[in-house]
Length: 262
Image (cartoon, rainbow, N blue to C red; front, side):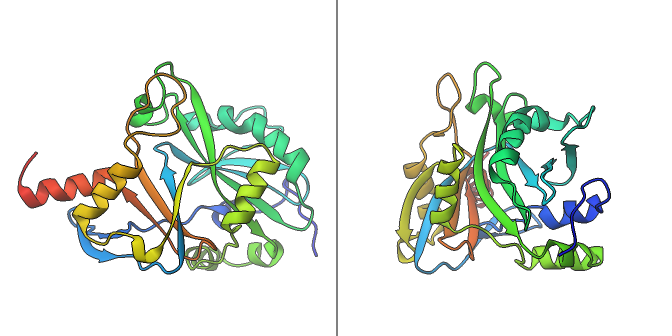
């Protein structure tokens, strides 16, 4: 296998290869008005429910040459040893120490490993007030991808890399391995709320909203002060082949538009 060198690698390709894919809403979202329809993402078997934390999607990319990159959802912000990093949303400051530790503990010369974390609190989003009263910043792991064929993938044209990613090409750790990996590295994950059979999931809009409210009357990841509102749920099959999100705001917006209330 060719050797990887972060100084000569096509970082635009690395960025595209390691972006987190978009997650559909559990009830289909109408792009015209932001309302939810009746159709739901179909699940079968066991479904793990985790809290969706309202922060910013971030990633730590461990490269085969023992280096690392830190990125937001859309762009790379910092490489190990940089004198100046992009300060966007405080992601680099929040994750640099963790990245150094993961580099020592989890780097693999045979693959690219990507840890996906939600950075929240501080001044990250308008919802930060629900997690902290003193501008503390936290992070929670929600997924890990391992890319074994990185050399072949990085040689592809940009459009094919994007199509591979959006078509489900990334290999994700399944639920049991993810939880074990997080424990091994002392990483807090997004809260596991329940595992239910897919037949137990509500399909009606009103019942789904009630289901959210019952599971998450408030966030479970408050950093200090009283716990505020949660953003919602993420639903996953154990192997992560099916994934969807259910956000309070989507159901509330739909209800307002259907009833004409504000």
